[in-house]
Image (cartoon, rainbow, N blue to C red; front, side, top):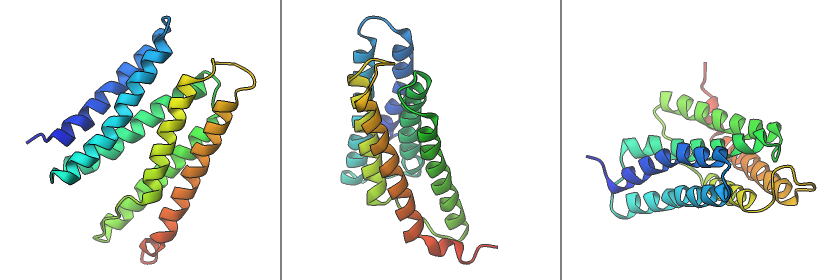
Length: 180
């Protein structure tokens, strides 16, 4: 059975290619339309989580797809900003490294019969990243110099990413004690 929460997660996934298509179309006002799409997609993340918890619609599908949809949405926007020169590639690499490392740690934990829930700092990281990406879409033209919004947004994204990753590994460091 497809729950309302899962439908919202699927909507977020469906909005990602629409978001990118509008960005790359480059018609007058395309960035504003893309921003609106990104905001709607980001809000589905809040809404699907609330609905899943409040109405007991937590499913294995949702546990897998919800964080995946978040990551794909964020990575799509960050790739765009790297491509147009508003974000350095190393910032995207830091975010990707954190996501792969956390996913790897979760796989090790599953092998030990543990499930590691998302931490508060990870939720803050996701929210801060989505807000910063919205700001980057809303303010400043590609190639504008100096682009303080992009610089400050990149610093915030990297800082929250590094902090949440470090906290995640510190709190769950025992996962690696019994690894062969």
